Image 1 (cartoon, rainbow, N blue to C red):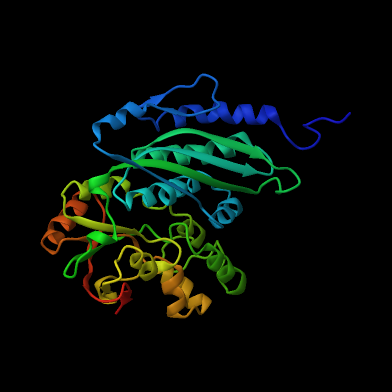
Image 2: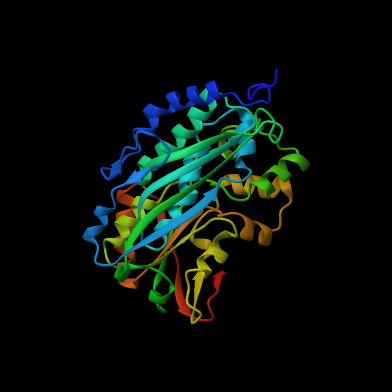
Length: 341
C-alpha cells in the first residue's frame, strides 16, 4: 500500500520534534509576541511601533552555508542555529535597527526529532542573545532530494529603526575612527574553502594543531558572535556613523559597503593579531594572503565607524560588555575603498 510514510515523510516524527523544541523556543520571546493558537503564523503587536515618529522596518534573510556539512559530519547540531541568528540579525544591526522577530526554515532528508530540536534550540538561544523573538518556522522533510543525515537551514528577521536615526554611508566623514569588534572565529563564511583545505591537505576535523589547543572540528564549529545588542548600545551614545557586518567577501569589501564615494577607510593590519585558526588553515592549505583577505573575517566580525572624539568611549563600552575591540583605522578622503595597510 502506498503512503506518505512509505515515500519517506514521517509526520509523527515532525510532531515529536515540535514538542521537543517548545520549551526552548519559549525563551526567545518579547512582550509584543501574540500567540496564534493555530500555529500557522507568527504574530507581533505592531502597536509597539507607535513610540517611533517614523518607523522604518528592516528585513534580512540568510543561511549558514556549508558550515552545516561540518556540523553533520561531527554530529553537533546545537551551534549552527546560533550561527543563523548571527548571520540574519546582525545584518539588521548595520543600519541601527532594533531586532524584533525572526522565523526559520529547516530542510532535511529525514526528521530526527532530537536533531531538529537541537537546531531550533540553538536558534532560540541566539534570538535570546540578540533580543528578538522567534515567532515561527518550518521543518520540511525532503526524502529523495537529501540524504537522511543531510539538512540545510535559513532564516529571516525583521527590525525597526527611527528614520532620523538610520545609520549608513551618508553619515561617514574624513577623520572618523574605525573600531573593530573581534569575531569568535570563522563565523559562517568561507566554509567551502575550509572544506576544500580539509579535502586536499593533511588536516582533518580530528587534527589537533598546537596553535589551537583543541580539535580542529571543535574550533570550526565555534558559534558566531552575535553583536546586535552591542551595536544598539553603541548607537545610544549618538556618535556612531555606520556599521559593517564582516561576512562573505572579507573585511575590506564589507567595510567599503558602508562608505560614501568620497572617503576611504585605511585599516592597519598591525592593530590586531589574526586568530590562530586562520593561520592554521592558510599554512596547511597554502592559501595566498589576498585569498584569505577576500574570504574570511580574519578576526573582525563587526566594524563601527564613529566620530573621532567618541572612539575611546566606544572601546570602553564594548569592553564593559565583554566584546574585545580595538582602533582598527581611520577614514580619509578617497574614492569609497577600504584598504588594508
